[in-house]
Image (tube, rainbow, N blue to C red):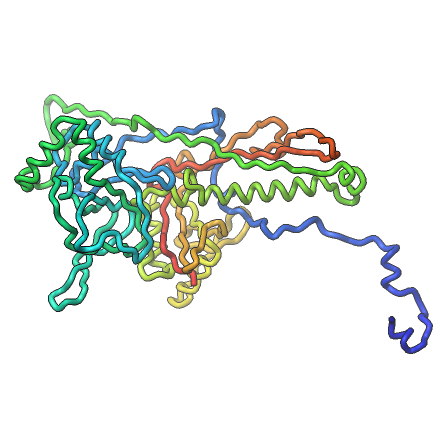
Length: 462
């Protein structure tokens, strides 16, 4: 009851509640909190992929003789380069690439969180373990009974290699992960399986076990035939540049959904806004958000998983500092184009700059102002995950085919194309009078050379 009625007074004019029945309501389009600026999609140059796949041809590269094992990764899957197994003392000098490939195929990948124990001192040494990525500590008992750090292993290091010789020993030290680690392990049983099927492998390892220093040399580096400083007409050495015999191909991924609209809604409730168009607009926004999420997190082609293992570094102290950003840009030092980080990581970096009295300048990109570091814009992307413990990652990249950088892959000219790279196909009306539309977009991303993408990991954002 109104106050006037309670006071037994008659209203003097029409009330607003009744008046609204005759008024036209001003309304907004349907709002959607999921919509973001999607800076990553704007930063990547998009390359047309006509055949549905994009092949990245590279020069064949691996360095034998540097004492460290080298790996390749396809997404999150890591594999040791077969020829790099010759870095293991027991296999140094062994040149049967088919056998080395068979051994490489038998390594199994394992993931460890920071603080996890990989092997315990005193347990049987039954496998060789390669540290593909991350940092581990070798822990042993000190002179006064306390546990001490005897050493640190990182990318390309290994332990347990004497197990290949069949020695029934135990691990002398405990190996514990300092950071999140990826390792590859080859059990002795898998090595025996290969050795039983080939000639010479077991004999080679047994000869090394009998005289382990026999196969060591000063450097073990293979020379490239060159000539310099010569005069006259000497015969020049010949060389060639080999290519990767199995280049990686990126197939376009797909995001699809079926949009359904009832004919009654489409016929009767289209004023002042077209219901089908609004439904389609929000569906397209959701697909684009999923597209950006996949470009960051997909284990096959996502940028966080496709960065080369040597292009990943950790923060010095935890929070992202200007020193960490300098180290990150040093990974992508040839024309870095953009830094991509979670908004909370950007805020953490800003706090570190404020503590040091540093105020990064802003730059204009895509018509907007963005903070920068060393002139490289820092763009937010909420698709980069933040773990429960408050850790995230920051990406630095060079972009474009001409710069041998990171590119996006798409396919335009699709049937019933609604916007570039996205089609909306009418699928008909069912017996319940519901109209169906198939909404589809195709996309992927490719890193043309390893140093085009760098990752700063274990970034504390709390």
